[in-house]
Length: 146
Image 1: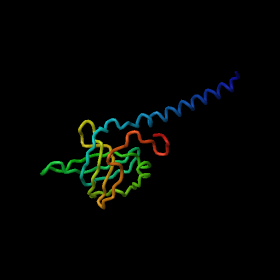
Image 2: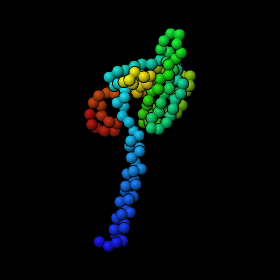
Image 3: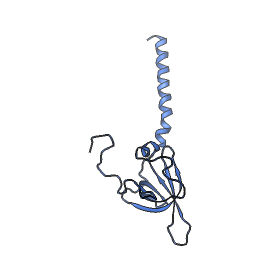
Image 4: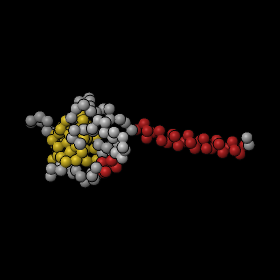
């Protein structure tokens, strides 16, 4: 093997290793939804404090009156990313601070005030999402699989 070809192979190997190393943080940063209790559904009536249209996940920050005479509790509701919820009709202005909404979630397993978004009812009665949760055995969008 000549030295020029060996040098090219080394550069190609280095470039491949660099590409893998650059992709590793993104892979490690992504998490599963195992922190949510998919066996439970909770419906919250509250006021939107903030709607965060961010990657990798959008968030609804909701203020919920849980106990009479107590200040509202803040709930953090995690959604899919903007691209995914955009396909479902969401825009950055779907929710604005002060809106009264009803949100259905899978709550956090640890009992903290948070959950995974399933559905929402807007002030005008418009419903978005799937309040019963994901249908077990449903195929992936765009696939013919059951």
